[in-house]
Structures are given as C-alpha cells and as structure tokens.
Image 1 (cartoon, rainbow, N blue to C red):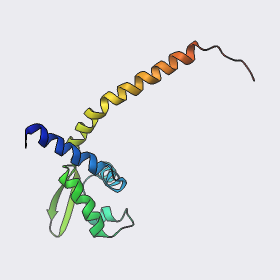
Image 2: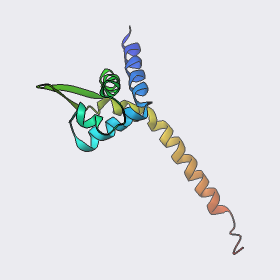
Image 3: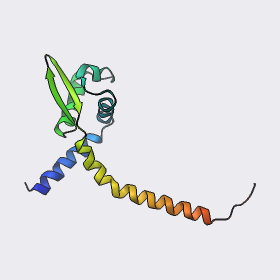
Length: 117
C-alpha cells in the first residue's frame, strides 16, 4: 500500500469511528473527564460492557483512544491527534459556509425594511 493509500485508510477509520453517536459520546466523556476505566465509561450507557468494548476497539483502531492496563482495569485516554485530520478536512467547508453566510448578510443588509406589519 502506498503512503497516500495508508493515510486515506487511516482517515477512513477515523471518519467511520466518528459516524457512531456512542463513540462520539465516549470521546466527549474522555475529553471532559480525562482517562477513565471501561466500567466508568460503561456506567454512562445502557449497554453491556462487551458492546462498549467493541466501540472502544473501533476507537482504538482509529487511533482516537489509547488503552493502558492498570491491574485488572483498562484505562482509556483520548488521543486527539487524528481529530486534527478531520479539522483539516472540514476547514474548506467551514470557509464555504462562512462565505455563504456573509453573502446572505450582505444581501439582507441591502434589502429595504418593510416596516411594521
């Protein structure tokens, strides 16, 4: 696989991981609460631990979380670096919408006020 192909595959894994609401919530919990055990994370969801473990595996495979063993516990930590790639991908779209909103604002500013109805 070429370097470009490997990068694209990694980006695809990140986007696929982010496509699921449960996984986005896990990332939010780790962002807001710092490293947490599987059990602490599982307490936030109405699912069995094996199901959450599958979500954590997808996040780990995408490089969005890391796992550290501490005795019998597995502690998960947010790894935000892959999110920078998402930000880079989204940036042109943000610029597009910002320009569109600016154009709309200018159009509205040029329109005469109708006065009270």
